[in-house]
Image (tube, rainbow, N blue to C red):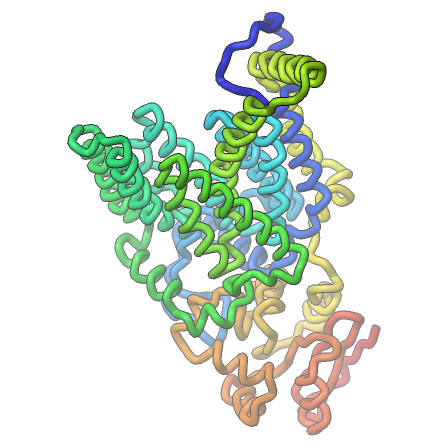
Length: 530
């Protein structure tokens, strides 16, 4: 195992430092491979569609939308487009490269995030092999939320802020004072910035306990550290007001994130399913975190203990938190495991002959790491970035990036039919189809509901949509209430069967994924069956 002792190694030439691959660049290649193999996942959520169209509006009007224009059920109601900057960036990526631009941009952002995660682990003196393994593991554990949505910006910004906080804690650098600037940017991209505030509390309390544990309670350094964390938190809270919604953003986020009834209806806010493959990866992450927490308590590293407890709790509470939890927890795990492995390696007492072999292996490994520390791996990093950009605009994009909404999951052909038939009037479709309709047919079609659950919660729409979808006794009355003229449903959705059985609705289109029903006026002659 590597340690802090300097090992003499051949000096690498200046050109070789930049051209030869490093262990970190090899780690990036593994992560890039995972991202490309799973590129089909990035468009599994139709929320991507309305984010792109919201960005289109922002770029066209040069203003952040204040009121809804996507639905007919809540048209004109106040809408907090609090991820407006991410929406605008997604719109720009679409203009440049279509959906391939969105997927390619998401992959490039995640490559940068995981490369930075590896560097953060190594900076904390984690063994490079351990750091590489845990970086790849962090990527695997987060696959469940590899979706082309604004939360990907939070992954990158969390790594950046975490590095700043640790740089202050360990070396008292000034990077932490850039936190308010980072938060001002973050608050316009995604609401994940709020989590740094409890993390700053943990840093302050943990450092105070660590000083006390070392008998340094009377020293002024701990008060200065606590004051720094407090001041950074205060100015960061003020910096987050630099959004179009100023202080009202906090109120909106608070109402959204504390609405238990609403969150209980959203799948990604549910606790992990430990029977699934994704859930088992999260289970391993939590088990490793528990081991790291025990080792941290032994070494009186209370900041690490607090961070592990916070993110374990958040992950158990909601599966969607795993993407950020992996970025915070794996560097701690890597550091604690590396220290434990070094101690085990140095305390091993094999026989005399075996000891010589063991010492030779350890010396060889340390020599390899001494060479690796001289390599930047820059050529590989640049090559990965250039290749991703090149693929996005090439004929290989369709094969490697899968830049399309899955026609087995979304009503792709049905949307073509609706556009050709020029169906008029108000439609009903569930939220996932609604988001796709916004992407495909806005502004010609205004939807019943889409994935903006925080917005629709202001009125009765979410509850009414649930009543219709689950065929409650009032379903037909609700369709009349909203003057629905046609419905876009899944092919075998019970609502479609019941609506047709009553004779008031006719099927005018049906394929392997979806069906379109129109209200029976006795005049419909449009039909299509696939």
